[in-house]
Image 1 (cartoon, one colour):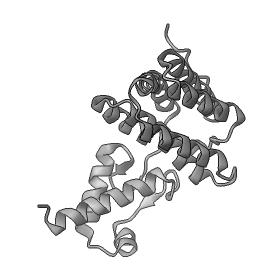
Image 2 (cartoon, helix red, strand yellow):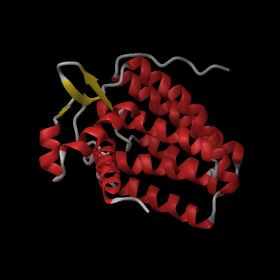
Image 3 (cartoon, helix red, strand yellow):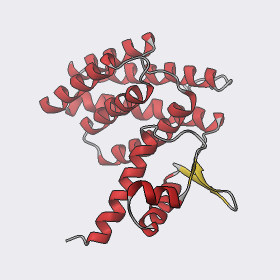
Length: 220
């Protein structure tokens, strides 16, 4: 059985990780241990441990003498992230088309409906639901190594989304979400893979345009 201190440490880590992924902090915003201690009502020890873990995860960055801040993703890292995500999301969608359960199909449909209904002005809610939709596809793939890789990519993508604020309600990407879902539910592996890859390429182009760079073409 876990001890209470362990539960506190995990709770603080999970809370701060979710806050970062949900955009509760601004890109490059500095996080102070004292402020976080007051905000969460815990001692500084679990705060310090959570910050160390989140730094190792790549969500925070520490600069000697300047403290800890939300990590800012470079244009090069954003480009490389979406290059990897194109392949991973394509594989996840293809496997989800094979292996999703009826319950997972229902979850995907509900999440996409919620995303489509989210206000175009509510960027944080859009981002939360967009990440959830892609996470549910990875879960429906029923492949543990893929899910582990997807979790790491989700963190990087969340940082990019909050940094660039490229809206998930863009008409082109919204239609592509529907195409991915339709192919997965139809158990069409090829169409699911192609739809997911196209979606990532499209969103990557929007991101790189926002960052002032042209994405590299996908290797053939």
